[in-house]
Length: 225
Image (cartoon, rainbow, N blue to C red):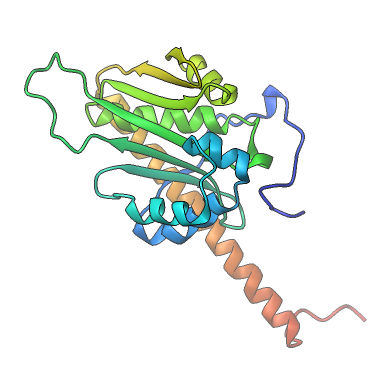
């Protein structure tokens, strides 16, 4: 079966939605994969993600401008190690305010390939972003979206965000609790589990390629006589 992002798939029942996803932190070496993920989105999906139908040139500039040292970039890889979901948590470059009463905010954006939607990916990516922001001392998570992006706004509402409709655009504000030992442990465990998942997928792909190469030159197992 093809893993093309544009191939439609029936939405699974709620029982099929995952309770956990291998959400992996991305680094500068993942820029080509991020660009490939975004370029695979059609015009409508690009407009819902960026607020306008971003062309390939804009996507390239966006990916090149990503600040991996400041922001949090993360995603979900399928068994072919294609980036099927991508999240960007944009953090304020300014240091935390000296006055503890001043709220700190981070903005979250996400895109998921069509055939992986309806499975809870958006919800789990938002939860991951909220956990990461919380552990950075952030008090509010913001989601800016076109008002027609009802799927994203519904995800934010289910997470407990307050959504303010402002004509063509809307803003969801999710208040975050203070970080604690449990929140930090949860983030570390999730990160470690995602690394293990990625390593397993990479090893399986290497073995599969080696098996195909061996078969092509006649080194595969001989059929029984």
